[in-house]
Length: 174
Length: 189
Image (cartoon, rainbow over all chains, first blue to last red; front, top):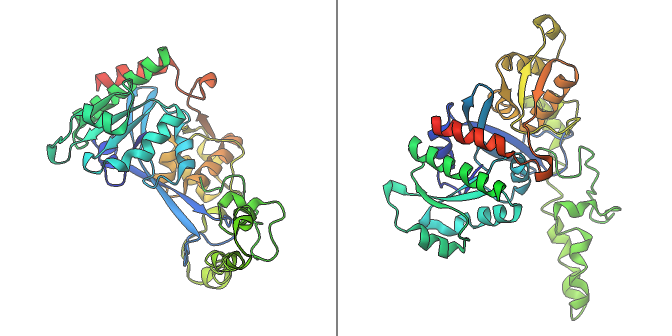
């Protein structure tokens, strides 16, 4: 899973390593009228569409890794619950200029127990803060890796994924 | 998914503020009008008056939107098929499909005759293996609908489904062997 606040670069990150252009799947949420009322003709806000971008990487003949960008609006926790099941882990992308945007994601993964790493996405190639400063600001334990990345670059995104899987593996073996 | 948690298509939560919900099902949606939200306010008030007024206005934004919309306007000028029309009104698949579950068509072309168009589209797409998420995205059908349609096809024996492996003891998390394979695969990229 690739999580983080709005506009932090989730889809960019997915697109950087995915072998396909990121695809978008949508779930239609409705108050209670599914199957009865017209869901596509929304004069009023009785339905909400939750969009999720995702990509895929074929790792082997019989092994495909899917990267799901979580829906930006963190109130759609139920979608996250769905994704967490069977997930290897999560990369929480952080824009250090808007640190608070990542709080909901960090809280969520801490509570769910899914292994996660924090990836500081340097906009315009800048990394104004050191990982240790961010660790202190976010009150993240020493076990959770914090790395810097550039979501636009394939090598960076790949390396972030490797860090995550290594971390998940360590967590399982511990 | 498209299903509100716990409440499928029944949609029987009360429209009218006056009739009150018999089973408290409205609470699931966290509407301020739900009885349990009102109660905590009641005892602490100095007098009855301040808490008599709020409920009515707070209910209104939710209620009136529903009635005017449905039948007349929609059927006239809406070009799209309603998503859940394809599923016969069902909002839940017969069994839970993971979003990343892989689908592969096993049906021979002649078996597709007489199937619903949506089922045929899925079968054509999945001649090459695809995930449920890809089916939803590539055919632009909502995820919840895609899940139901794929489950139908699986039940009819027209597609094979590969649910992602996982360690049941660890809440469906991937096992160590799988993680190692993913890691080595990523390093080889």
